[in-house]
Image 1 (tube, protein in one colour):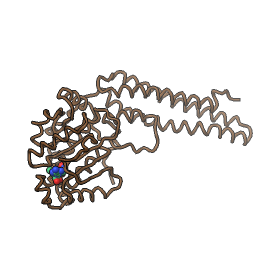
Image 2 (cartoon, rainbow, N blue to C red):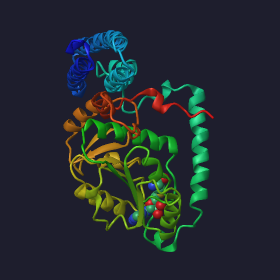
Image 3 (tube, protein in one colour):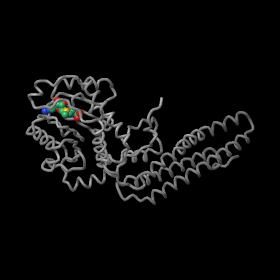
Image 4 (tube, rainbow, N blue to C red):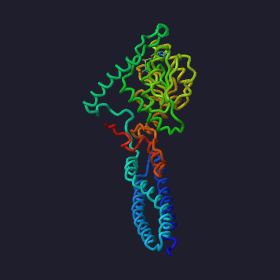
Length: 376
Ligand SMILES: C[S@@+](CC[C@H](N)C(=O)[O-])C[C@H]1O[C@@H](n2cnc3c(N)ncnc32)[C@H](O)[C@@H]1O
């Protein structure tokens, strides 16, 4: 007769013990990574070593379990008894295998944790001088292609009504420049530790390509334009895929009363007449909730942001309802956010590592192989 501790029930209990101990260490590690600054790197290393030890222990536990199971089966006298023994070990066997799969992922998760052991600062706008010349040239070529696509998607002439209303036509900001601003805005959003889904708005969206692009960064991306033909083109583009959470509508930026519904507002000098442009900026600044990230990549905004009560983060990124001192401290936090533009988690099952994956993604880090270029 096998002692309880040597039988399937005993191993089942020991498996539960592993699971609890591992989850306990993971929670402590998560608490460390949640800190925006002054992480205790030694504590991170210590907790990683704890998990290393647990994984080694687990492998020994698996060997002990197999030995016990084989001995138990060998001691069975009749075919019925063998069947009962196999059934009894079957459940604990399945659970231990599942847990082993989890344990096997530790090496990957460990790398992710180690990347964050000290929250190092990286500039919100990395200097272009550091790019390889060939990369810089490729970006320029890609921008040219995006300009062609932009023109193909929205071939309409500007309407007379739009011209009379001092609207600029649909002139695209360079694609690579837009990504620089979006990336900076994204890191500010991460640093703000927001909880709800982030909503992006393009004020004067033209043919909608920027609305689509921003959807890679934020879970909701909307845009509006004064010109009905532009809105129709944007609508056609975004209707091509029903998985997009993007909406476009006809609207005058000067009379819109929904700026308060967005977390990131992008306006690339839609209006040519300075007096009206200022009126639009005032409407945005008055309605935007404090903390709303504004992306305004044109020459006259830097001279006006302060009077509008917006703090400057860097480049074309500002934050509404914020003093410059507050903006400086937010920029430092944003600089500590990682470089990943995190994709939504598509894993079908939950995992013991989820708390670490979640906190890493909230810090702008993720598992690199989720971002490898597809190879066909
Ligand atoms: C310079 S383009 C920007 C296009 C696109 N957002 C981009 O960044 O590539 C300006 C756009 O703003 C729109 N626009 C101009 N005045 C507007 C207004 N008062 N209300 C809404 N849209 C306006 C124009 O029709 C045009 O499509």
